[in-house]
Length: 197
Image (cartoon, rainbow, N blue to C red; front, side, top):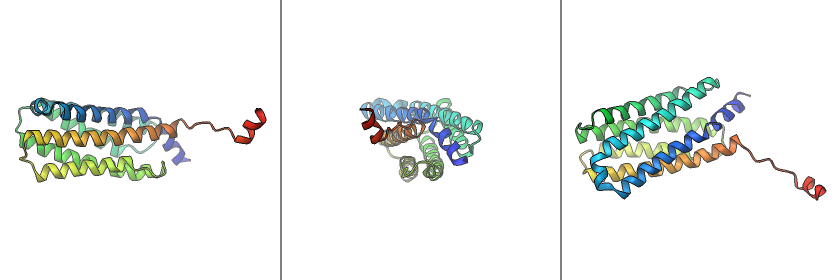
């Protein structure tokens, strides 16, 4: 009974998951289309992306809490994203190294929380893999930022762009899979259809 309730509650928020994915894809496309200009403004753009993504995640956590579902991991992920976004927007002139380290910490923390959520989601949706892959991509980005913190601004833009694009696609796939759970198609048995014809 509880599992069915959680499935309906989570699936009803599929639009927020798709929205988060679309924001990620747009960020990735802008990073690849205008990498030179993006190098100057990447702190602000990434800060906006993390902030908006965090707000969407906190809203999802609040709705989960109201529905009687567990919400702690979602809330923590959302608050971390909002904090990183706010720091990036409020102090854009901070050194590039500090920004890269902040992205690394954010990516690893978000990735771990996404993998935890993916394990829970597998109980609700059979063969779910999109959120788990998104979590692995987040952790990989974080380790890449720690491994090469002094890489040029253009390389960081491309890393962020590739991550946001792939993660966004995974979130869109997950959102539409959740939509199928929230709005299952009504199937008419073939015998009943033949009798009507």
